[in-house]
Length: 406
Length: 139
Image (tube, rainbow over all chains, first blue to last red; front, side, top):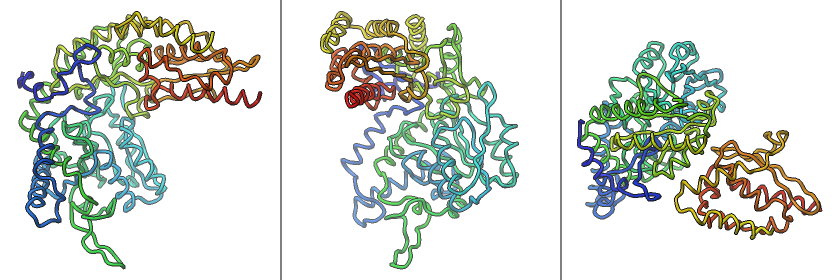
């Protein structure tokens, strides 16, 4: 084992509680991850010692808070290996990052008859904003399909590309299937045709090492709360040339250079996209989460989570009538499944009463669930604080569900 | 039997079970005893859509009383639906409209009726009361 699991679990106070008289097992990590004490302390320390509005004040606290905020930005830059700090924009989360790009990119570059390509496995956050902006601009949204094992159908994706394609927006890792898409290859292919690519990394950053320079993606979006940081903070990485070209998404304080009665000029990157007082607490917490991940090492995390996944697949495969959704060879550590014809809501309700948090339903990816023609799935998504024993308990719980609903 | 009497009967049934899984076993059994809804009412027109499970609800007005039939695609939801039908079916519109359905709290299933819970049950109760109101107005 690459790291000491009991030490790690001791960092996550929430995990030691008992629910329904049973020890809590938390397998809803794809929805949000739990927070280590390091993150919780960083936030309370900030409010106890450093709280101040940033970028404007000349006084001690303001300078200190601004420094911490901008150091955090630089650390995030290092974490994803971006070229420049101003390519890292803080947002409310991946959803806002995606909405920002869809809206600003659409406003500037989409004309009637233009095309945007996305995939059937997208989270609504990377689907609906494009659907809306395409409708507004008279552009066409094209949707690439998947293969039976949940891999993206690359042939289909590439066949959708035309001389009207303006951008390709796809997920790094599917939140339902766990599929890790070959984004580097897709980006290279798209770039050979002069098409920029946006990657929704909400399920990527917490599981696999991400290097935006190596990927050469034009945009990469992710949320803090899915990578052990606080809620309400996220990141938009964008290549400088794109961020320079995109018009602002929202306006207000901080993001303007000069405002006269006649006209307004906008601040430089990244502030052009950060209107209003930012979520300083969120950024401070995200920084602590990021440091925590770096200490563990993303490669170690990936290796350990792969072990968890392998064990889960082995254990669950032995259960009769188990159907997996998403069995791609390159997969993040989650399993989506149904057992026999048991409704996912029924399964999830009983599993919950056994102290295990799993997610049921369509996971905000209705087009994908419709594609399978099912009411939803049960999803167990793992994090590095989960254990083999916990997975065994889930397997037992699933067997119990089978008995109850026979 | 009055609404309150049926509620008390259900509360008694649950009282002897402490473990959650045992409680759910009763709920599943109750689902099985739900009289089937006429298939012609199992259409989108009669659906109460929740995010996760679907409920179909039909109501008839006879001799000053409202009679419900229902179904769900999830068995736990169906069990809770069957309790609501058992309690409210065959009652007068006035009684249905004023029922507070506290038994759901008493047996510890409050979470299932919370409007933020996406299983359609909260909407179902609303719909049952709406039927009662409409039948009363039509007289």
